[in-house]
Structure formats: structure tokens, C-alpha cells
Amino acid sequence: MKKEIIVYAEHQDNKLSSVAAELLGEARRLAGSYGPDVKISAALIGEKVSDLIEELISLGADTVYMADNPSLKYYSNESYSRVITHIIKQQDPDIFLVGATAKGSELAPTVGGQVGTGVAAHCVELKLSSEGWLIQVVPSFGGKVMGEILCPNHRPQMATIKPGVFEKGPKDTNRHGEVINVDTDELFKDFTPRITPLGVHYQPPQGRPLETAEVVVAGGWGIGSKQNWNKIEQLADVLGAAVGCTRPAVDEGWAPGEHVMVGTSGKTIKPKVYLAIGISGATHHICGMKDSGTIISINNDPKAPIFDVSDFKIVGDFEKILDPLLRTLNE
Amino acid sequence: MALNIAVCVKPVPDPNNYDKIQIHPEKKTLMRQGIPTILNPIDKNAVEEALRITERFGGKVSLFTMAPPDAVETLREGLAMGADEAYLLSDRAFAGADTLATSYTLSLGIRKAGYYDLVLLGNESADGATSQVPAQLGEWLQMPHLMNIQCINMKDEKNAEADMRIENGYIRYNIQFPACIAVRREINKPRYTSLKNIIKSKTKKLEVWEAEDLNPDMSRIGLKGSPTQAGRIYIPDISRKSEEITGTPEEIVEKLTNKLISAGVNIRKGAQAV
Image (cartoon, rainbow over all chains, first blue to last red; front, side, top):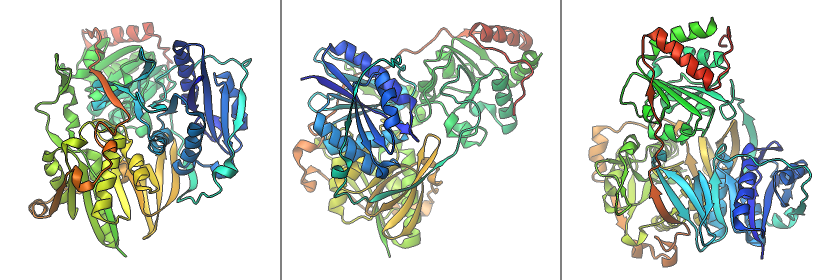
């Protein structure tokens, strides 16, 4: 029998999430090391989502399982997990990959609980063992320790992966694939929801998005004040950079919010250049930026752990550097 | 109206000390000597939310944890915040549990302790941070469940509205009780414990239940009940050359600018921050 890898095709308002494309790319890569007899599928859930089928196929899906129903317009783990558990029971896939977004991080363990299989959370690497098992590398203790997780006796082997960890695969608009409709009427005929979505409220983030930025200027506790924080924003602007931060900068209200936080409980990014200012380098922050191209850090504590992961370091008071730097750059 | 609320908590090594964690060179096991164990920080938000709800509507707050015997201290911390009673599920047979086996064990403890309208948890633990116990506990208890909740608005004793944080906003849900909800840290500010409450906590009910007290399906607890198995662990080497840029501030600025340019930064002269 063909082995099957299914990817959850997360979307927002019928626009495919980047992580879904990244997971299809990774699924294709995994399929390559499995051998020829592997099928890659996508699970697509929502209302009027058929426009996404073509995109999923071009990104690497051989089959798209689609559950399209007005009652699935809004995500709820209660209804969406019912669809995914149904697909898993029908198909018995070997691997099921889900983006570790807010929704995916809830959906995957819910399905894992329903199916009775294991889920490895926030994987940073996937590979195959000699037995053909999925080796899922996950961070713990804020990323200080990496551990390999195996799920030898239960299927599917489920994993969640944060956006930005894997590369999108190439898009091939000539690829062919099939669509299998999930009979939602049958699936939901005796369904009495206990969770009712009342609406989605968007709070569009301000500034350049961190995830796609090539240059990031990040500040932490050492910045010291909102006034100094404005200089971080100015510097980011001159460098065409996105602003990033650590937890204390969010808590102090200097940074605009958690959407610019870098680290285990924030974003995982790998820009070409990461400039860390006033960041000591707590383990959970480093986990989110360690794969950046060039890392330059400024800190007045010569023992700051951020220096260990930096290509270049400036030991000293950032205030003495920032003003002349802004002047020079603006000249 | 009164609500019974169960809060699941976890003792974790203090996150401020994770850089001290090492792996034993021969045994390849984690060494966390000298790192104090604390109540998982976000679990305090769950306890706080439970206390606020019961202060308004009446009822009791029970704490649950599955942990080694010394977790009594962690539970006392929650009792000192104001929880009424605590249950420690502790047995060697629970060791090696992944999230599915852990949530199964917790569900047995909660069921044995009585009827709960609401089960609250912190969204993730600082150490493992899988965020998987809340949803799986909800599944075992056959309760509707939500996680990543930044706000709970009680409608009546059978319903609440809860806002789930998503990447660029939130989804508002209505959820029917009994329900299982995992909260984010911004939901509230946990109270400080007073000396009076710390003293009071020492006389509050704290029961320790072993595996046989819970009458579990033995194939679902501990290592045996865990579909996932831990393989090799390692501390990745992420160090870089850490070349120091030195000189007067002006020299540093010049060198830094050159490094930025050669790393591929395009400088937008005259740009102003908005």
C-alpha cells in the first residue's frame, strides 16, 4: 500500500497560510527519502475553499481532501477536528503535518487525542529513521535542549511545525491532482456543537512584518525606556528593517506587541541580518533567531549570552553608538 | 449559583535558569541540579482566573497535578494564592508519560474528585512547552475545550464567551460548560500571596493519590500509555565567532555600518520613523 503524508491546509479567509506551503515542501522532501511509493495530500476545511485546490496541487499535493460547508466558515477545534479525524480514519496516513499556528497548535493535539496517537510539538527538523519512522526533533527548555521524538507503534505520526522553519517548495502549475470531497452532511448530521464561533476580530499588525523581513533590528530589556525604543524604530526604518523584541520589551509596553516578539513563545525567524540591541540573550529568545544570516549584537554586559551566538559583538552602551549611527546613516 | 473549578498545574524548573541545564556526558540524561522548581508561571494565571470566577459566583477551586511527591510544595503555592484544596497524582507508574498519558491521568483524578463546571490550565509549560495537555484533557473528559484564551467573559453558570488569540487578532467563541479552557498570560495579573494565606495554605486539604486510587487502564498511563517515545537528546552548538568591534564610538559606527552593508543591508538615507 502507498504511504501517505497529509498536510493540514490552513488558510485565513480563504488565503492559504504560508506554513501550509512550507509543510507541502517538506512533505515532498520527506517523500523523496521514503522512496517512490508515497502520496502527498492536503486536508482543506472551510467554506467556499475550492479556489485553493489548484494552489495546493501546484505546491505538491497529489490529493486534496476538501470539507466545504457553511458551518465550517469559522475555525473551531470541535468541528475541524471531526473532519480531520474522519479523514485519518478513512486514509490511515503514515504522517500528518500541521502548522504550529494558534489554530494548528490546538487542532493537532485534539486530533491526536481522538485518534489516540502521538503528536510532537513545534518540530524544527523531520527525518526518517532506518526503520522508516519519522524522527521529530523538538526543542525543550526554551530551545536549550533538543530532543528526538518517535512514534513507533501508532499512526499517523503527527507533528506540528512553526511557520518559517521549513522552506516552501517550488510551485508547479502543471502538476495534476485529484479532489476528494468529504461528505460533511453525513459527518455533521448528529453534531450538536458545544463551541460556537461568534466572529473573528482582526487587529492588523503595524510596521514591517517580521516573518518576511531580510533585516531585523531587535531590542530588549536593556533599551530601558520608550524614548530609547523610538530610536530602535528609527534605526529599523533607516535600515529598511522590521522591528523585533524580547518578552520584557512587550511587558514594558515599549514594543508594539507580542506579534513582534522573537523566541520560543514568539516568532521563529531567519533574516539575512539580525541586529540585537540591549538583549542579553535568554535561551528562549535565542531559539527564535539563532538561524539568522549575520548576527550582530550590542550589549554592555561582556558576559551576555547573546554574544556567544553572534558573528560580531559590540561590548558597550548602545546609547553611545545609536545616536552617531543614526546620524551617519542619515548623512 | 456556584461553580466548581479544577485547575491543573505543573512544577517546572525555573525558566530563568535554563542556560544551566546540561546533559550527562555518559548517561545522556538531563542534569538540572541546582535549578529550583517553581509553579509553572502561566499556571498562576489559571489559578487567578479560577479565583476571580469563584469570588464572583461562589464555588470552590481544586488544584491537580501529576508529578513526583515533592510537588506538594508547588501545590501549596497555589493554595496560598487562595485555592481551596489540592490533589497530587503521584506514582512511579506515571513516569515517562507523554501528553496523552498525562492528560489521561489528570482526567481520572478530576473525575474521582467530583463534578467540575470548568477545568482551567495555563496554555503551556515553561519546560516542555508542547501546549498539548489542555486539548487532550478536554478530549479525555469529553468536554468542549479551547486554548490560547486571552479573555473569559462568564455569561451565566452554563456558558462563557472566550477570546482565542490567533496570529493577527482573536476569535470569539461561546463555550458550554462543563468545559476545559487554557489561558494566556495576559488574561489577568496573578495576585501576590500574603503571609496570612501562606500560613493558611498549610492546613488546607491536600490529598495524594497513587495509581491504584485512580483505577486506571494500565495500558494508558506512564511510558506504556505514551504513543510518543523520547529518543536522543542533545544541546545544539549554536555558537559563532563573536568577533568584537572595538574603537571610539565613531570608529565603531563606521565599522558597524560597513558590516551591515557587506551583510546585505540597503541603507535608506533620510528615512524617518513614523
